[in-house]
Length: 228
Image (spheres, rainbow, N blue to C red):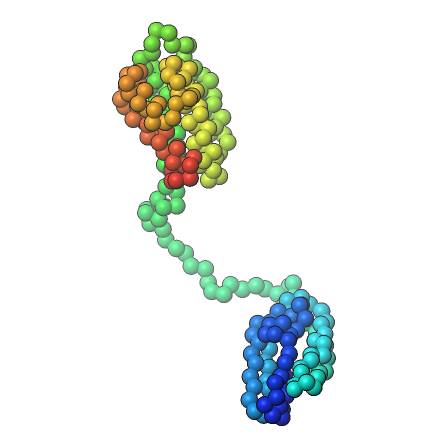
């Protein structure tokens, strides 16, 4: 605290609040009070590094007269030792989770995994029971399954990278539909592709529903409108 007596209503000018001390002193509180007889300035500060630090002489202009404080040195010592035992603030408390808590924690992973399973089942059903046109190319089963397996190994879901997962999943699906059923899935927008599939009657209604759900959910994730 700095106190100047007998100021007699004179104006006292000093450094602005929180700027009186050198930079390595972290000023926590700086309050100024003045009346007809005295001027007080209280400063609370912290120093976060160990070592010796000097508070220089501080200047105060009292009615045109410069008054200076006496500089002094402070020694900052860390009282904690490496061998000291660190204790918890309070004992650890076990929290019991209910079923709904686990669902909230893992629902995105579960839904994403179900989407993958649904699409794989849909592709297998396409291969076994889908109705192809006479000019359809050879079934692209092996290549598609290899690409799905490669996507799974990238572990996008585990890393929370749902956008990359859906981008690649939909790209694989579009390529499969284009090659297997000669539908322009690689150039059509999702809504247009769904309309073409329904009008073309190439696959069963059940499989159309699976593809529609996966594609629409993927678009929401790709454009950051929703989580899976």
